[in-house]
Length: 304
Image 1 (cartoon, rainbow, N blue to C red):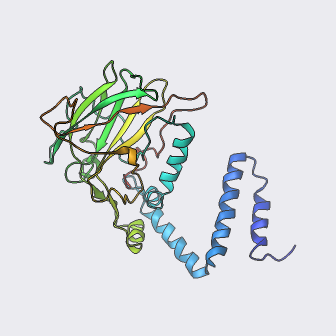
Image 2: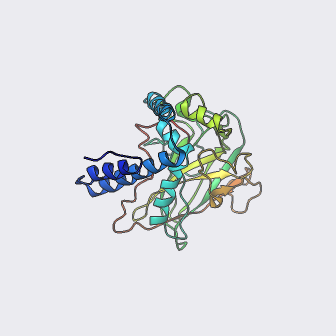
Image 3: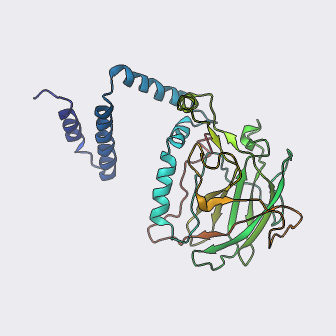
């Protein structure tokens, strides 16, 4: 037995973990321990600081419930959720396919079904009505007939239905079926940007970092079609004041849209239009086609 110092403790910890039979678990935990030890050495972490960190993580866990997932929120505001999403996207999306964005914790299975042209909004709260329209194609631009499109968003006051007090009622979300040419259109109101929950430990961290905690106005979209990867993305309104500083790093330039009056091809020319064509990537032999993100039926709501 030899005494352990600031460097040999890492070697010994990794030696003891080397017998882990699951190769992926061994790889992930080994890398995590190595980076954590390097982090502690890099900042010369003190015992009091580490206990403060443990207290913070404990508080994050204590703020998780059936209707709140503070650890997802922490992952979001640190940019880790987006990093994992980007890596998954890069590994499986065809170059011309639509970029993905965060699924978020407010997605719900079995949203109401609507006919093309109908509105997502069951209980209006004001705001500017718009028509979202476009076409679903493959990465080469060939139409994908009858793709299923889920859409969900906040209302004009910045609230999702799950935040309205009646978890059994669905509003501001729905499913549509594209036509034989892959074309779709539906009505909604322009959603309001909103703040992530700032009343917990993650919110206090964001305040300590002098960050605003805001998400820009956006509409979540999930597109599914047989033989193609599920596309989980969102459309962000480019004139939102926080479009350049989304607290959870969800915005990509290719996903920024504007609501424009008189837009060519708008099936509802009486309304401002948002045109967006979704391009799906084909599912590979080893690709499950699944969504990137937590199971929202057990983990909600955090940031998105």
